[in-house]
Length: 178
Ligand SMILES: Cc1cc2nc3c(=O)[nH]c(=O)nc-3n(C[C@H](O)[C@H](O)[C@H](O)COP(=O)(O)O)c2cc1C
Image (cartoon, rainbow, N blue to C red; front, top):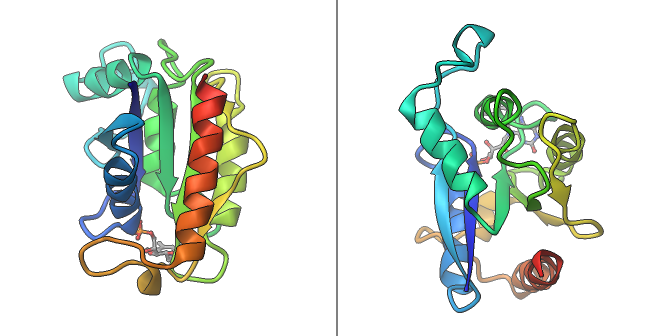
């Protein structure tokens, strides 16, 4: 059984991207276990404190380093990734590099028609930086548009096409992780 972490790419209680990771945890429980990591709990990165990180930062990075793979669920804020996610990635790019060479799968849900495509393009660029060095699953996109209509109040997705896209990419990620 693989052990993955799911990075919640937004920092508010109603985030559908958190619901998306919770859905993946339930839906693929026979293939991997998934520990959700909150980006909103981390202090704002500063070089003044990069060599004296708080325990919450250390725990966040340790859980990533110990995982077999990483799933990042990003929201889209002003055509890029939310601040809390960028902050988390900055913490993972200095002094220690827990994402280096780790397999990463991207998913995202947004209210509009673009399904976080602009945020995910930025995210691929960020993850390719030398301080982060992720191995991102190529040729797969999970872009959940109109998220307000896709999720039930309980956090489920019923649209078969959305679930099929998610299943296909998840299978590709399992093969990518090896
Ligand atoms: C500050 C801010 C900026 C936003 N910018 C975008 C955007 O550029 N593109 C987009 O599709 N949605 C944008 N939205 C709407 C998000 O798609 C919406 O808040 C969505 O729910 C975010 O994912 P979440 O459910 O995980 O919070 C923005 C929302 C906020 C709060």
